[in-house]
Length: 502
Image 1: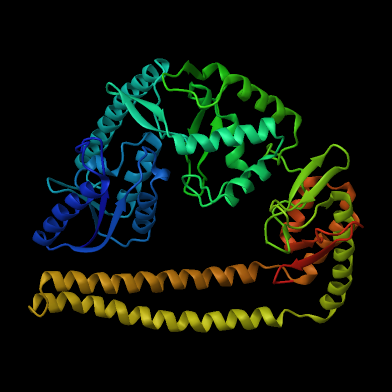
Image 2: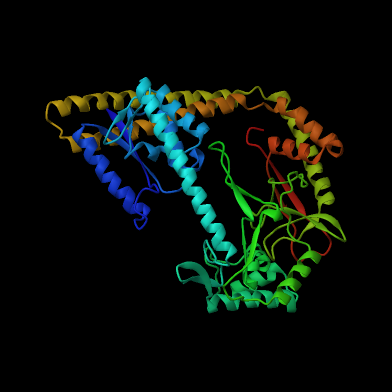
């Protein structure tokens, strides 16, 4: 029987034991069980992230995908609740995947076959109780954290400028003087010297100073320091909440809670900045122009498309009080910015020239290159299938060698893992080849792209910003912008690179 092992730390494990220690201990137990039961372990999934949702656990998502590809006869775990104390929806996805693909859930105490009604009922009940227990634990933890914050204590990672300390058994902050000096310098440069976030970051970097998690200070880091009330001795909790991922492709993000839901308290920790200086910094921030943030709609028609030719950074739109919208390179001292309207005119001129060239190309091209590419891939598919057939035959012979005593169980398991890994690689290669053929077949020809390009060129000013951006992303790979920083005559160049299939 080919099985996978799934490992995950639970709240029922010893609190003083690290994730690595827990997973190592469970792995040893399950491998011993697999050897005793003559199970072939082909892969081990080790979950090192926490979270009660299915899609925040990448190893579980990968396991579900592999089960759907019928790679395993069963999954071995230390107990049922390791699969997740998830909500009804996620629980249904997990159990339905195991049931549909006839995959057993194996634990050292019991084997569960979800196509057996009693086992299915037992599994659902155990996972339901595990979920209810998680809710109780979470509610107690949340209530405890809320009381801690209301009393002025700090939970979470200490911010730059502070280190963790304890007052009794309750967590608080004490000043890390070396970092606190940097925070004071940031506020002094911003409030008293009139320097901007870019200049402050570059100044700190030139002094050889570093933040905790990156090699250099950035504009964003400086702005975060300037807005953080922790530095005037306040504690703010529940400002944001994490949005649960609903599918594997969802990106992790946070949303800001309404201010009435925030918990604000006077911290028991010492302040680094006085309130007068902090408030002046906030007043200055309101009067200065800052890099744009996403508002839920597109304002830049070249969003994600236009790059700085010097450094490769994505150009951003910024509203200038004097000159209106401009596009600029976010890298300090790189390309100079230019008016968005002038850039649009230059890009449109380039697209019109490309359109005229493509009209001539369309009359001559018959799609022969596309057919040749597909034929090459089909040849590669045939060779891959031959290799896959050979490996599957080798895997079948492994069982004969085990029965004949040529292989012992560890050797059998090791060889099985290697062959299974090679089979998985070839199967993934086949899938990739099939995907390439579909993509090539779906690629429109130049003739099919002409109407979109024609509309983009001649109806540009009647299109919405989102329509412009979407159409350009269909046709254009990248647009490179360049303007020398010493230029005083507003001369710039744009280089439009079309998609490879055009």
